[in-house]
Amino acid sequence: MRMVVISGSLNPQSRSRVLARRAHELLAGHDVVAQWIDLQQVDIPMCDGTGDSKGGDVAELRQTIDAADGVFLAAPVYNFDVNAAVKNLVEQTGRAWTDKVVGLLCAAGGRASYMSVMSLANSLMLDFRCLIVPRFVYATASDFSDDRTEQMALASDDVSERVAELVAEMVRLAGTSSQH
Image 1: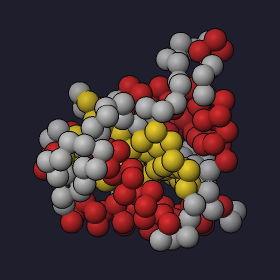
Image 2: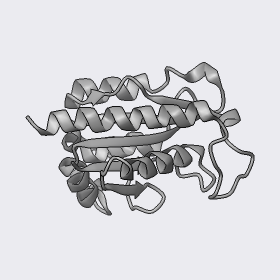
Image 3: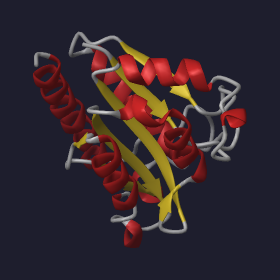
């Protein structure tokens, strides 16, 4: 089974990256080797609808996503939606998402925007027939330690448990879908 964990935040002190790292760590306990992609570390031009914007690392990212059985997508929530970098990744890699099992991990400023991932989920489901695991993880600032370094950790056992549940469900569903 092939999994990809994508950290979609461009913030060096990203809380959604903490969620992505935890999912990546937990996959090892399921004997799953997962590739790590950090959007801070890749070159993805803004999609302009032409072939000219497909440079940088887009072809490699498309191949990596296409080869995966499941994709964890961690994103911050800004203005009641996932950040533009994640939406740009989906636009740039397009059909590579077809028929993927997708698990969403989100970090937001407050509890009010917990439904904000639905436009992305709808797009992935309707455009690319992805199976979106409904057990997505949504966390707010209070779920993390106050340490604003790369070592920042989850302070909430509840969120840690939800990440573990998402990982287990992703492994189960991706394993089932890869057998067909």
